[in-house]
Image (cartoon, rainbow, N blue to C red; front, side, top):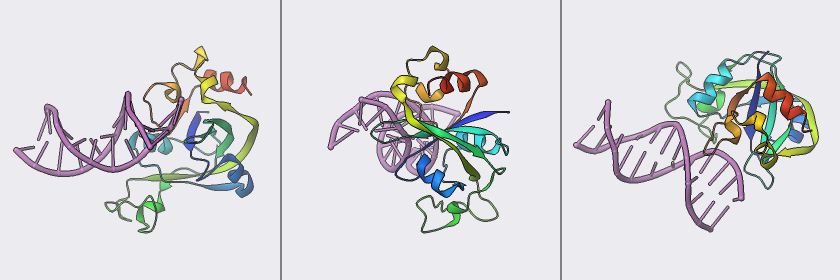
Length: 149
DNA sequence: GCCAACGTTGGC
DNA sequence: GCCAACGTTGGC
């Protein structure tokens, strides 16, 4: 079963928000490579929930995919921050998935620590200049990160 | 707030 | 199809 990592600004949605909500829609992805990964997700896949653009960026917990991908409705909502004028109901290029809370780490694993792990050198998250917000995580990487909890 | 790196747009 | 300009991401 594939593993993933997805980034979220905690001001928008944090792992603690998800804990409270139990389940929510992961939308607003507007990058084709990231979207393609969303489209290959399956229910019950697990992912690391990463906090970005915040005082201490890092992996804050684990969540689970609960739906196959479907057209992202925010692309069609004019008032949405994620509105895309070129999208239509008939032709919506963007995808969303539903996700559920699994676990919040007592302490987020800081990006700075992840960068020191030789087992994670291939992970786009730690590569200089990488901005990919949805990425696959190998079983070995998953285990290496879990060991840092 | 700065800025490096990236993806996208659009003129040619 | 090239590539300069622009907007965005996201760490620091």
